[in-house]
Image: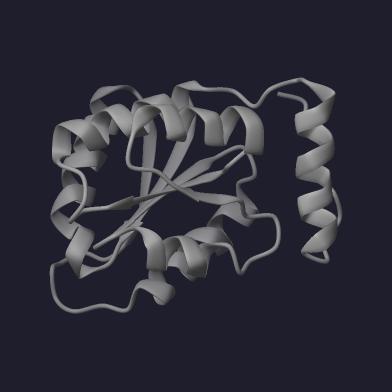
Length: 155
């Protein structure tokens, strides 16, 4: 059973709760890194909490939600080894996994509705990283440019 880490700020709280229930129904192990209410919260704090946990669980994937998804994406990509992708449609989410080995999906609660978000998350989680050498080489270059060591992936 794959672990999915999920987090949001106040703007994404309601969508996070809906997606958490959806993912649990789909059989995923879901770990909620916060927030736990719709009280004002700073998205960088949640993004940093989720990405720190993801570094401890390299086989997990993450989902971050804020108003637009953009702030979370910027904050998440500050951490080495994190490849966060903002997506507003299932095709982009799937290609982010297949071509870029994205390990965090960022969604905008003010941009996508609950049903579309479920489709985006499903596409992201069900798509494996491509075994094509060109994609592997490009992802390795991303890691080197971020100052980290290339990650070896066997999936």
